[in-house]
Length: 210
Image (cartoon, rainbow, N blue to C red; front, side, top):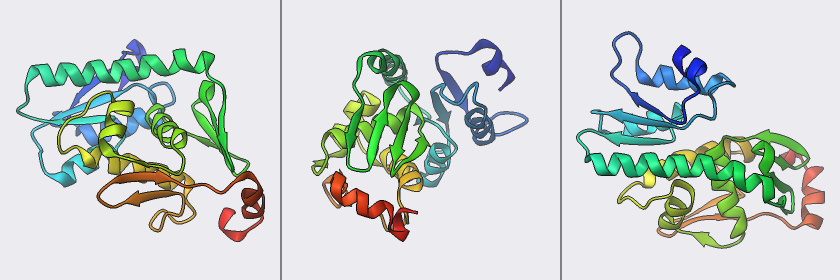
């Protein structure tokens, strides 16, 4: 963690099986420190169970690879993460603010205005929400999300999307366990459904909106 603060790398390859402290803890510390919170983290591990992957993504990893893996695949994922984190600042300088109803995305600060409340997002959460907002009211497939947000389309990587959707719901939904805005369309993908501006004005004063 100290090296990451000092060197400010473009990306961190983090092995979970570290000698003194496990990689989950290191990743959590990186995400809590504002100096390293936006550095992309690719976890590498021999722990291949779904629960291990979920724990790694919940700790703040952007992506997770299970050993053994092909070097070409790892390099492809590294390039995809670097493209994503490099692309956002450039796009943010020229992008207009995207808004619908109670939600406004603010690219230059990687945050959103949600029912008049400012919510800080990670780079990945911002891109994921941007992807859904651009297709408001439409179902976006896992393949489309992976290609647009992560920059690749691996097989059977739906768990990565699920974890980050869960993070967004925690920040935006009144009850993340029963989402009313970021909806799962079973067997098809995810859909962002927001009230119109007129409807959201009513929602702001309702108990659900806080």
